[in-house]
Length: 566
Image 1 (cartoon, rainbow, N blue to C red):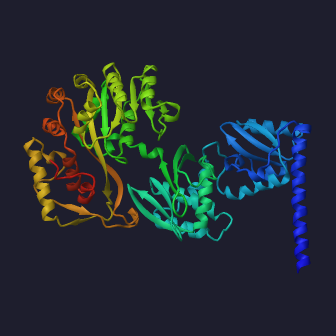
Image 2: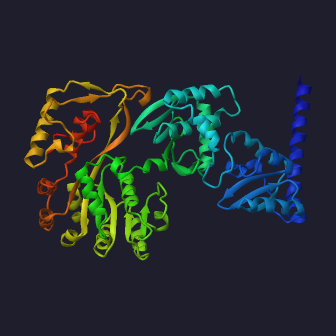
Image 3: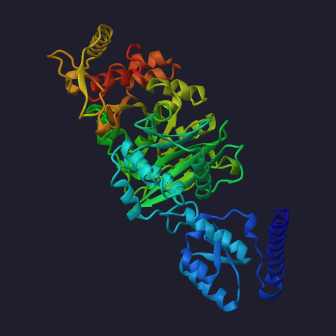
């Protein structure tokens, strides 16, 4: 047995020596004979995006392997880089709008690259930062997915295929999330398993568990297609890639953080369809809608939205921009990051490392002579002052601000050293919004109102009435006993009892009472009192309307708004 062992060891040593000789020969011939650099792919990561530019069969026949793509530059390993072959390859990649850079490589290097074709699965041509999944293939996955249970079935059906299972799990997860309108995909490694969860209508739901070995390969593939460092697993990383479905580009923002049992992966899905929500369909009550339309059609002014992360501020801002867009006006946005691309609008993204902050973006955009500016967020005094000055000099400015309610906007701006006398003329509208889940129309059921709930409802109705607001004007039937509904759960709503989301809003606009009080450095309470007789509902009243109309549940509203707040 020892002799056989020694023979095996000797054969292995000879094979290793032969490989090394080939690598050495490539190193010598590359520059001396062919005038191209050598590349050793055995110790390098291979970019799947690069491989997708040529079919495996053709790559093997030509003896080539694209291994890295950066923008339009593609780096290609060639086994025998003769002039006529390079000329043909130059034309091939140029026809596909790439600028090729050629390298000489050994057959062992090429074989390593070609092995990666096993991981590509459904994916076809893809440019840097994007993974162009065949529309037909994606539809084939999505057509059978109506709920979370269908996603589990789809994964179980492909588990027999050991070669492509990992790639398919990721593709099924993405296709399934898009199909059921999930906003996030979470891969969460634990000691003995990995949880796959989706965020649906703002709430996380467990989809299934996957084996840790699959998570390892999914992690590597996500890093590859989103441009992250594959070898780094002890630092947080952020990236992005895209999926092309028919005419829509669906972007996925990727976040990885190290954990005790591996890296936690979250992919946020930015589907253009989710922002194609008409302003009329966002749950804005008619009187408030009229106020919005009046203010956003003015040639100048400052309109600010407030609300926590995930409350729909970006969607509302984009809806405003789409409502007022025309070829006759110039709109510029400064965002962090650009979440959705809007046709006809100049969108820029902040980059703090390069000094392009919201402040610098706002300053630069003013030199472009815009009519409308959207600033993703007002974070500091300087940005606040320039936004206010811009509103005074003939620009319509949209932005967001960190406050709890609409009444908090004015004190917050004054805290940021904005001159109250200037603010009187600049600020047009302060809006607060929250998102609540819609009750599933297929399974919701009426439930008994608790005594404390009835007391809160009656108190809110009395307060509204004392300020000349009649909720019957908003579709609430006050002549019959109140009805409220609770979630049940069915296949149509993934057994959650909810399907979709709707906004609840409040707004304060500048009327005479608000203008008079601004210069006195008012508190939130004083501003609320001054605005109580404005025609729009408070956020508590708007939430109550949606409860009593059976649109959402009492618990949903109280999870985001204190109904007993003065």
